[in-house]
Length: 91
Image (cartoon, rainbow, N blue to C red; front, side):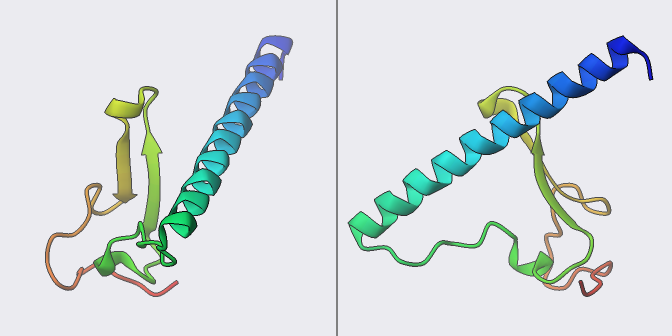
């Protein structure tokens, strides 16, 4: 690996780490706000059809907050719309 690739990798890792820290800080603030308002349960972010599935991905891609795209899984990028997904496999 040359120096340019190595510095790109370091910058990418640094960006990913800072994005995770921002996300974690935001989740902590939401948790505090929910507890102050009396909400104790957090709604699951995973669709009901995808719970327990090995193919679930659930990562949002993109740079701008308003234009990020959530990739649910490799088979059904926007999630399965029916009752039972035909590609569901246990974790």
